Length: 237
Length: 314
Image (cartoon, rainbow over all chains, first blue to last red; front, side):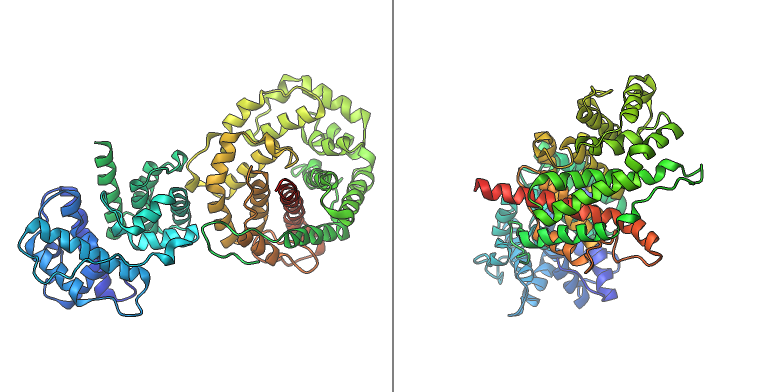
């Protein structure tokens, strides 16, 4: 879920993976996300690193569409979780990203039934002190990095902080759009879909379509937007 | 005082706000000859083109003079500037009449005259023209942007004439009045927003003139706009937005925005319009920065007024 830096093959792998998630979300059917990604060899180290970067969203189709995740996907996901534990000096966002992946993995294994062995304990939630007094700009930025935590039943401490500050996150959405930071805007929009108390005047639905129009060519942007749409539809349905 | 990055916005130090206003007034006073008309203006440009700065000077100096928080030095400078503009720039009002005779249906002489009249200056011949124009269907039909129509309605009310178009109708047609998607606001929209607030509040003198619906909208989105235009170093627009903030029921007096604004001000008090000071002849530099410097004085006085009244009610 973190910015992928300048490594071109890895960036490409993350984009491909995100494309595959978007495709799975759109089709509502197939769930072979990792193995289906163009040019991704499932045993390659880059693939596992890409899974680690995209984070819990790799398993998002099974969560949003309530399907059983592909077993090979889950195995690769597990490799990413166990292979990239956060180092001692990891940023809070990185620690949270890892926590979110362990949660997604536990859930996947619970629904699949057969892959519980060796799953790291989800354990206690990481601390949220770094977000408690955050300015609205920093709050939105960090929430955007942790966009994968914005799910319909997301009950993390991060989600609870977001729930207390809908207007601040909405301001962050405005800021991201004004700066043409489409990835941050899409992730903030995805969070906003999960929050109560967002001012009507934000024009969130049109805002999401605007971000799609301007930045939807980036699969990671499209992923957040598609997640937002599915959650919006679920909310209305 | 620096922004702490906390959930609650840190408030600017009132000494810093006051300093911005005093510096701006010193610069405006020292450069008062920059407020000049051009009787030989190219007809394509028009004689009335250079009246706008004088009108803005008068409106803002009036607020400054009457606010009672500016300190005796600033009030004195404001009074001297207004007097200079009336006696020298406008030749005791004769230039306004000349402008009206050049373009009889133009509302500009009226817009410039209003603040002077409110401060006790008078020119009966110009007032005759203003009252005649007010009777014309043509004046009401004059095709202008909604925010300018709102200005004319507000000035008519202040002058003692019934607005030619109902104010509520005009407000509802402005960008702000329709409370649109805040992420679409570009620079020219920013100015529409600030001026809608100026006219509804009589240039910050009556914050209660801002309807609650619009105040709530601005309380939600102004922080995002302040943040954006601060980062873009659009000082002129940022200053106007700081006035808007000071007109809200609960001004934030955003420390980060005020510190950035104060940091852009030059040692002599001039405020660049965008990024840094321009280069050129003194007249050219004046024409680029007089407005942002006026806005600095304006933002300072309205923010000080609100800060002090909040203290008084604390």
